[in-house]
Image (cartoon, rainbow, N blue to C red; front, side, top):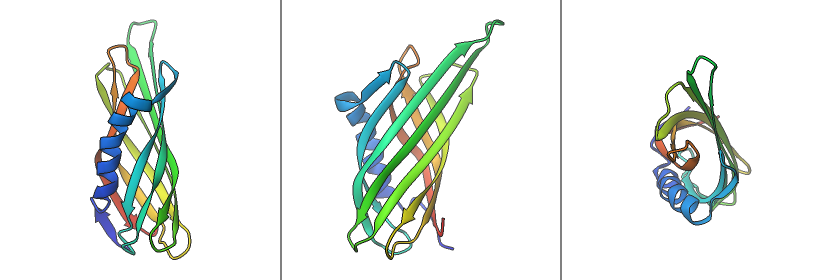
Length: 156
């Protein structure tokens, strides 16, 4: 099994740069605590070298509440889904999600995520893991997201 840390730097750069820019330009709020956006993505399969391009749909939900004792609680959920088309004819079905909880309000939350890029055709399946960062405004509503760390391994 091949393990690549930062092997998908191109995808990360596109997601990090596009997520924040796209949120401000075209992100849709389904409610104050829900943000959806579509980001362009480019991925280099570390197993085959194939380059996949397409768009990924991102959903971010931030829930905050206060217990009767006055203690706060924040739950952040993020998911990414989409399809990337490879330059060697393969198709990658991408799906990842993560959750994070905190008792402290902040301007961002780091969310561990796990997922797969299921390769069709000659593409290998990939297992993806990392940490995403969700930025929130002063009221705790999501503004955007980026990637803090990322790794991919063949055979996911």
